[in-house]
Length: 211
Image 1 (cartoon, rainbow, N blue to C red):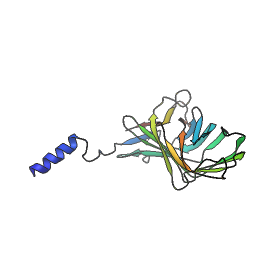
Image 2: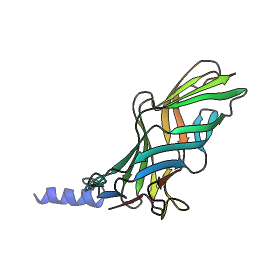
Image 3: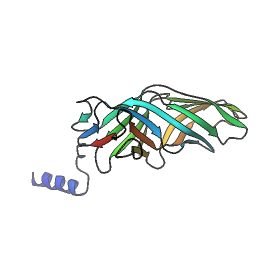
Image 4: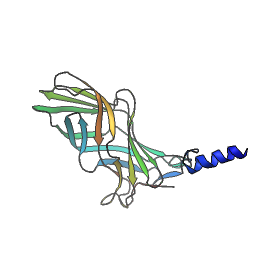
C-alpha cells in the first residue's frame, strides 16, 4: 500500500498521473447571432501551390442558455457553410473557377489560460475546382471532419475590437486532389485563417469565452 502511494505520488510529480478534468466554459451572450469573418487572407498551401482567398464569412449562433455553458468542457458555435471568395492560386496559367462549401461548420472553445479555439471543418466541407494548365478538383476533409486548433482571444466589441480565433502555427487539413498533370498530390494542406467573431445582434458587445 505504501509502495502504491509512493508510485502515485511520483507519477503526479513527473506529470504522468491522471489528466486534469476540463474546466467550465461559457460563451456569451447566450443565443446571440454570430458572424465569423476572416481578418487578413485565408490560405491553403498544397505542396508547391498556395491558394489565397480575401473573404470568408459564415453566420452562426451561440447556443441559448443553458446550452452556452458546459460545467466540464468546451462549448461550440455552429455555423452555416461559409461564403469564400476573392480566391487565386500561384499555379502557372491556372485560376480558381469555383469554391463550394457544405455542412455544419463549428467553432469549439474551451476556457482556460490560454482559451483554446478550434475550427472544425465538416466532411467534404470545401471543394475547390481550378481551370487552365492545372485543371483539378480538391476536396478538403474527404474522409471525416478536420480540426484546426488555435487560441481564442476575447475582444471588447463587435466593430473595432472583436474576439478572434487564431490557428496554431503549422495546422494542416487532409485533402484529395484529382485531375492529374500539375495537380497536387493528395495529402495534407497547411491551413491558415484568423477569424473574428462578431455579435450581429448588438455590435457594442463581443462574443466572449469565460468560466
